[in-house]
Length: 302
Image (cartoon, rainbow, N blue to C red):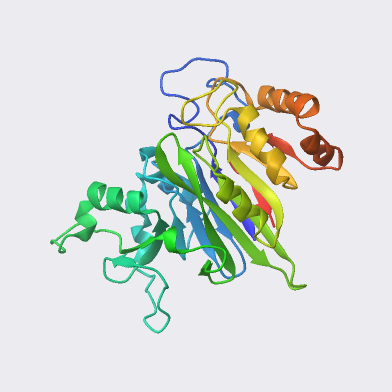
């Protein structure tokens, strides 16, 4: 299983429109950040997490030519507003009636499965209401199959071909948000996972236990780390490392990053924190584990 981080920036993106700061004017490609998204592939499967405003550009840049499903963390504009551009994939994706999905489904005919929570389903129906109206002459619209992810868990995972997906409940301020634990099984029967937890400032204990009890090796944790300072709806770098200290992944990457610090500055700051305040992460780092800010185009393998 491979995950490409197709976007690692906060809601403004980096560079920020009109900003002339050192980060926004940097020539370092690691300081250029699309809005947060990820593309997951395996031998048989293609999945996208979030369809923000740059989804079309991300699909072209990272050669996304097929989709089996979309996972939406939440319905804020920077994670959802490119949803219409899945239409190119959705018209070739039909739901097999002989293999019913074990969840309450709200469908627009047959089409691309979109997994998210009930709050986001409501927002999608409101923001993209034309998708659910009778077809009018001219134009086009995606064919999507909205599926409430709340009925899936460790005992009843979402199965998308050869990838197993578990929704991980999070809080993004007061908003219910969904992280995702993606697991593949290797030929030797070992299970390997990537946890993708963006746009959160609180991971409930139940969600911590869900990841810990998944019976798989956590190869990578991709977690919201907005900036050095605290924020009301996002983890700071220190707070994100606190979750990593508990979960103990082999590698930790911060995402949803703003323009306050450069990639290199964040690298130095994070490693300084690890050495001074996070003994478990320091052990992992000393054993070769990576603890770092993410960047657009980063490839993670599990």
